[in-house]
Image (cartoon, rainbow, N blue to C red; front, side, top):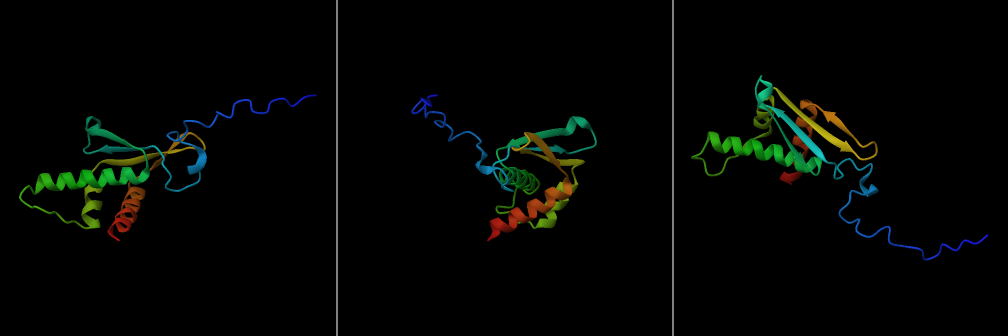
Length: 130
């Protein structure tokens, strides 16, 4: 019985640098494909979604959306500052804010609600403020 398979193709690992490998599994803020669902008003037609490569990017996107809104409301203010309560209010003005984050282990999207989003956004901004 010969184990004559030596040197037969060590090429299985090439080109994986861009792939979502298992290195991130179990990491709370690994690069999980993340979808943000927003519904600004009572009508389903006001639903919109954005997608990001990670939860952190999704939180950035939400903050960016809020900042854009502030600029529209205050076009004459050069540098707008806001606190976390303003951001919470912005989230609350939406009929629906949900985040779906891909769990690589199971290959399914896990939904998170408004309260989770607020908590995460708060932690996210605190981390940035340092």
